[in-house]
Image (cartoon, rainbow, N blue to C red; front, side, top):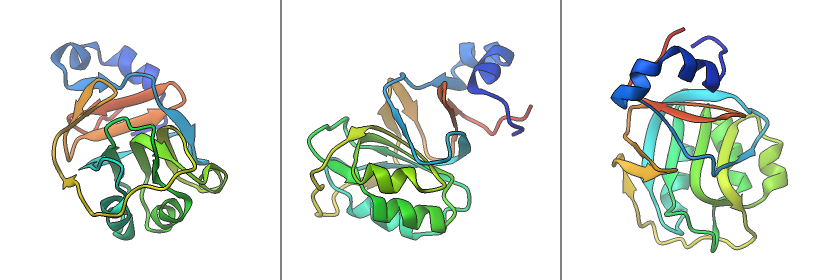
Length: 166
């Protein structure tokens, strides 16, 4: 997709909004990382206060994908830290959206990748490897499925059932 804003996408696609094919996440996410605008096909993960599966995903080639993690909205610990974000950047992930907290915000802000999270928190997550990969999740008031497309900029985050062209 050409560089257009999420607001422009909404303005030019009212029929997709009405049909539910284009949805906006609630504006609850903070912006981290140097890449404020990013998009790509979604990979979903559900992991509550546990970061083992997140790290495993980010060790894979990203190929421009966006990892979307339903962390249950927990504000009790960070499920994403600086080292995995550096690895994600180096492995070609376009971005990471976490319905939970990050840590090492200064390190993450130095990375050329888009990261959205609820907040920054100093406490580490559990390491039990509990979670679900490639499952439909609901975060920011929006249901998100594996393979959908995510578009993020400083105005917000959109989810589309298909890749959008402008």
